[in-house]
Length: 187
Image 1 (tube, rainbow, N blue to C red):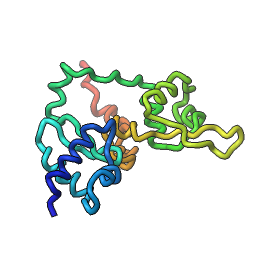
Image 2: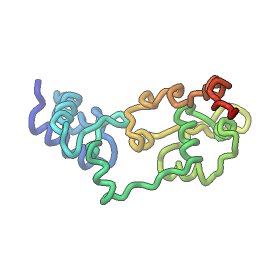
Image 3: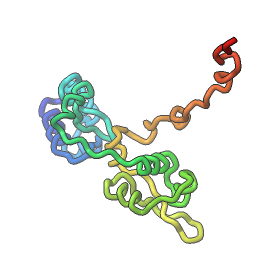
């Protein structure tokens, strides 16, 4: 059954006004009883497909985003958020792939200490949050990513992260430096 036009208008207004992604559950709270929130979101996404803004699935809900093919043109007029420093991105990646994780575990994986400023920056941006405490001596805090992390990186869930194996660099080919590849000697 095709969603009613009024349902589409209501969903469109809700997604537009929301500060973050809108889940089907949230949408169902404003739709009339019996309306299928998933069908309404699918119809709305189809309506916006190929337009300047598109309805995309992110962080377990939907959100309007600039069409990817137009984003580069808007970079000249829209303020792009400052990139995170390398150490913050490393820390965020470790947390994302190993959560929940302690600060000590992060430091062990990085092979370097983690400054409080880096953790504070990730907290301030809402990308990470405490996820309880480990049941071990000292009861260190456990850290994990937030829905804002998913939204920031355009992910619907943590399952959408690239596989760790795909991120590893290939080891250099040892045979590439063999004597057969060396330039001929002058003689």
